[in-house]
Image (cartoon, rainbow, N blue to C red; front, side, top):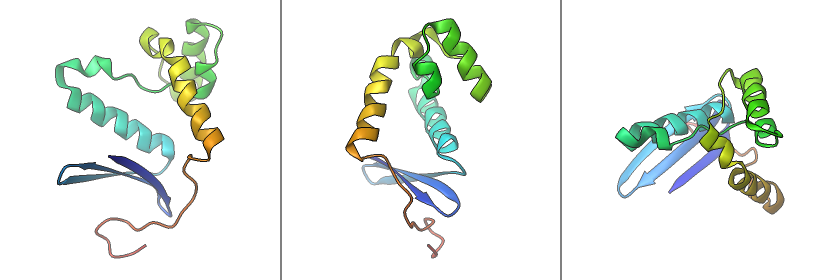
Length: 118
């Protein structure tokens, strides 16, 4: 199970895997998501290339792959793989669901794990 929440310092993401709990912190949601992408690549081992970094929204709505690469590079300094661009409709489905359902995370009070303070 994976969860993310906003806190004073930025964002915290928690992964529950059986009895194991791992927490990740990011100053921005983009930093937290990037950390999750990097961790997923590490966990995938030799299949690391099967984990695609999520393009920015503008790149997902680009008219073609070349434009997507340009837009993503302008905003992140990174390009977009053909495979990630090919998944854009699925990624946009999730994006629309989050926006329309109210499921997108909003600011909330949260504690820093193990700190004893909120």
